[in-house]
Each structure stands twice: as C-alpha cells, then as structure tokens.
Image 1 (tube, rainbow, N blue to C red):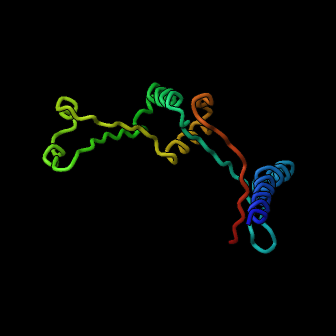
Image 2: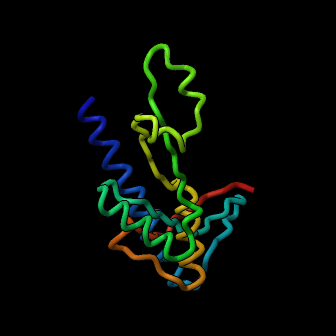
Image 3: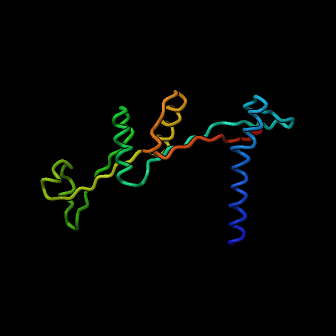
Length: 149
C-alpha cells in the first residue's frame, strides 16, 4: 500500500508538472491558448487561482482587517454561538445581545468562504489589483484542461 501510495504521489506530481508547466509552455511558444485535435479533443490552458486565509490567529485577524479596510468586510461571515446547559432552553430564546449581560459566555467565530475568497482574488488579479501575500496564501498557476466536443 505504501509503495502504491508513493507511486500515485509521483504520478500526481508528474501530471501537475505536465499540466501546469510543460503543456502551457509549449502552447505559449506557439502563441496558442488552446488546440483542437483531429479526434475533436480540445486542449486548453486556463489560469487556476488560489487564495486562503492563514490558520494562525494573528495572521487571520490581519487578513480580515485588510479585507475590511478595502471595503470587503461583507465577505467575512461572523458566527456567534452560546452554549446552554440542561434545562436552560428558556435562556436560549433570549436575544444574543443580552447574553453577555446575563453571564453567558458567547463564542464568536469569523470566517470567509474559500470559494468567495478565491473568486475575489481572481477578480483582483484580472483587474490588475493585488492582494497582500503576507496576509493570504496566494498562488496562480496554469492548468491544462482536456475536453471532448
């Protein structure tokens, strides 16, 4: 199993290199973005974007601060939860704003949906705008796609 997993890992690495480097470079050298083969298969190269928020709490908060400063704070989902013990169903019905004054300890969690952040990054790159790589994990790479028509 370990040998097979290592072999699969090596195949994936080779596939990624061919898909993101070799084929895009060959097509670029020829001035092509796509190529239609005799059997109808279309080979095309597109950009693949990735942007994630770091897990480190300080870096995550800095990334959120940057989003807010750019007027993009609405991308951040803010979840507030309160845990109640047995027999406290009536307290659960109270408004969250009253929770702290009643002695509850609400837990707050903020997050940005990964696909939303990825779309934002793609839009900014395509518009010639940047995102701080010290606050987000960013990468753009070519990706080859085969499709039969």
